[in-house]
Image 1: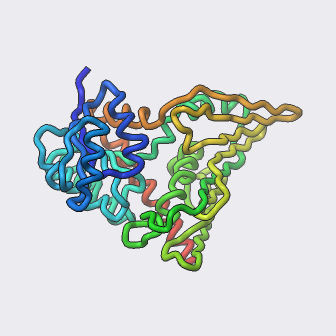
Image 2 (image 1 turned 135 degrees about the vertical axis):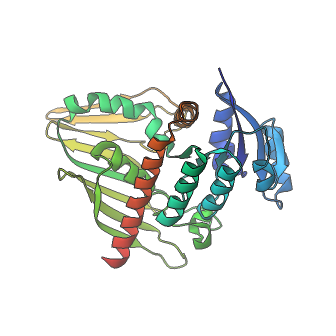
Image 3 (image 1 turned 180 degrees about the horizontal axis):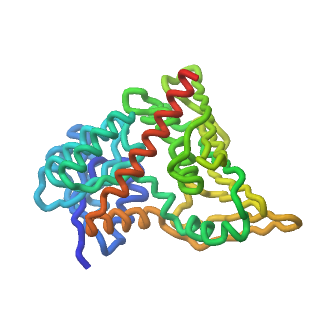
Length: 323
């Protein structure tokens, strides 16, 4: 099997806990190096020892390496445009953390450069590659019938106040973070041609970014997706699909850990059953997709998905702010 040599731009928590360990498990990739800011020498040293790869001080120095074909970018959202475009300019494919960038204009610039350089850009909404979604799609027509409504929620309790998600200049805010998951879920089940019909974003004293909200989206045939999201919420991570025959609920829709068996609940008249599905690593799923798209030179599909996601997020903000 042809291996793709990959580097990591930044010593982020998600990279350390989940993405880099997955990369090292896979036959498709060879982890060459990880980089950090020039002020993070000790963290870089720890990463390079832990993952048995080279540590490179400075993101630019990693991108200029000739022994890399692709990079994973888990930096704060406000840095995505800059470093993604710089990666394309030196011939690297990019898997970037969600959101693709801080606004639609920025995402369009990234996509224009990807097309110009004929490079792959993927956005790391890993959950859509979990096998629980394949399972539900196979049984959806039989168990749910025609979809009448979809509800999706992703909310988490408050974290450390220093988290980049609470910093406006780093691209923080719940809309650019947790909201993206239920927006993506609506596209998966209702189609990419959904439109935002109403939206609400709420702020809290002591925080400079949007902290919780809701939105209603509608498909071309009139099916509604109702989504909710929050940074100061009782934990919720669910999708509920209600149809004319029954209802299916994902209890761990977006964050099923590789060691966790996700639960699906099927409800019909006089019937309720809970199904524990097999464990799966959705990070491995999206990395396999990244690998295949690179090898098959099929980046156009990913471009369209990224653009539509950015358009819907911008529409939610516009409607929430302007009505």
